[in-house]
Length: 443
Image 1 (cartoon, rainbow, N blue to C red):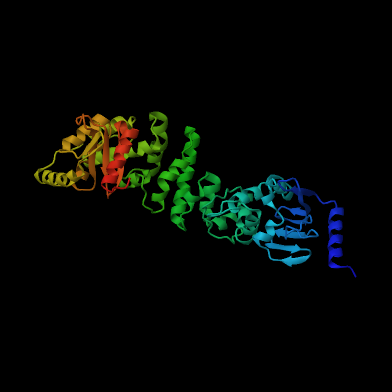
Image 2: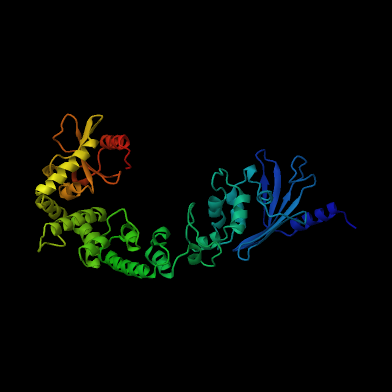
């Protein structure tokens, strides 16, 4: 009867004689560590041997050279490791013993040998995602192979569906049998992602069939406009409108809310804001919505019965409306303004070469808006009612020259606009930040 050592030596000879594709691994001193033999590779896994060279100083190699066998089947979730023909735990350490990355072996070669045409790139991408997580700094074969098949087998399905998996990505159902189930998307949301190129995060809005149907209908309309006008707008449309569409509280003004508030046909406004203003007026969707919302609000509040709902020159129409906006306050309203002014004076302060202070009279808002070319002149009622606090940032040596208009709301600086709604200069930004810090305001 053969000894255990003889049986293992026979196994080594048999593996070497089979003609399996193999790859020799060396350490940094060019010493042979061992050889990996590919018994079988599939689109969903592999079956390999690794024969360690004898090394008395390395318990994983052993004095006679240990044979490690690994079977890895992602499709059926079957995986095991044997060392010298004896089953051992499928652990990070035992997997790492087959792929001694600590010896500096190029993983590109290893992954190339383990891959088929159908899964080419899978292991490399999975290594980036799973090889080190959290505070782990070093990517390890053992970590990623172990995690991929025990906790993150969904990665294979997503990868083969060409869905990039990134750190922090929310996986709704790790045991899902399709990418849609794994990501927790409705059929309509899946269509938004696959047909219209929406990001997964933007379409993942729970199970709201009514909102889903409305969203897909609007996306189809935006797509026809993209073809007609020859520009891409779906991404910015989704960013701007979906929070509102799904009943969330958007932090940017959505065109859909403006349409509902002022009884404007949704699709007509979408066409105007996202496409006509861009092509004919050179306005970004962000600027067009902001300008339009101010324009329509002022015209409605001023009681205009007949006005151009879709001006050919929106910025000009907006500026004219701002100049004509009612700023005359009655005695009671003026009293409220003065009371609010006393309260707003607490923000009056010097910040380096600049001074921050509130407007004394409603007319000051109009002048600020006219000089800087923005709509702050229409904020009289907001200031009077305490909805917003408007402050002027000006140079200490020239307090009559408008530079930056600041809006404070709910202990937060929500806007800081320079001429023509442009951002402040770097020096002005620093002054705004110092001012915010002084009064404990979020920015």
